Amino acid sequence: MRYAIQWVRSLVFNILMYVAMVPYAILYLPWAVFDRRGAVAAAHGWTGFVLWTARWLIGLKVEYRGTPPTDAVMVAPKHQSFFDIIAIYNAIPRGKFIMKRELLWTPIVGQYALMVGCIPVNRGKRAQAIKKMLADVKAGRADPGQLVIYPQGTRVLPGVKKPYKTGAGVLYQELGQDCVPVACSVGVFWPKRGVYRKPGTAVVEFLPRIPAGKPIPEFMQELEEVVETRSDELMREAGWRPEAEAQA
Image 1 (cartoon, rainbow, N blue to C red):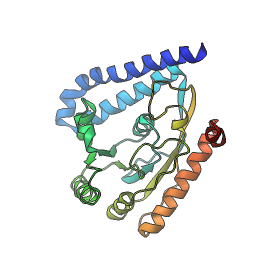
Image 2: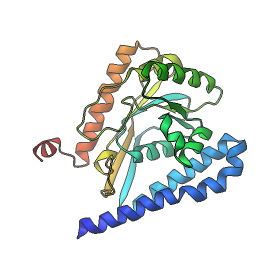
Image 3: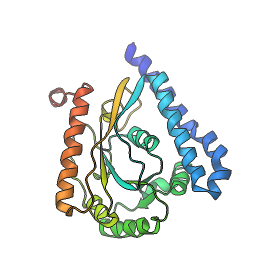
Image 4: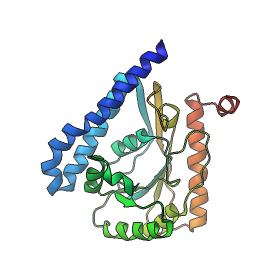
């Protein structure tokens, strides 16, 4: 019975989360069309609403650890679900995501993503995608902010290992900026697919910076080690047990 009640709450929350995009998009549109700050304010308003609603409706809280960056840096998080995008964006002042091009066709999300400065890439053509990404990043340097790239390129379930892609290293080298790794335990509570959302406290932790200027192989090795190690620790803290999953 408890699971059924939580499932219904999760369903209501999911519907409310997407429906709420509409009034925020309409309310901020006149400002957002002429000023990027309007789009950023809309996105922060909506992500704040989602975090607040998750807390009281499904009992899912977000705890931030570490120091979210406010200067022009590269941010490289662990990606487990849509919820970590929401939590990370809400914590930084001018986030701009490297995102898959298909999202441009998503109503409201695609349009506002472009207005806040997100950079779409074609994941199917790796070499061309990296080249185009670098060109777009250079073009967008006049608009400072925190450029967010998911180094694994996609959402990854707890316990699943996927390689870190070289695009993150190339971007790190090209930007010449510090990188802020981000670990999280969001996937324990918000799965990649499905309706059910588990109550509890998901942690998003901004880890110590990796200084600019390191060779790409050294940077990639350090990034993967700190993000994966700390994310596993946070997930275990949240009650995740890989041994139990292996036996299931």
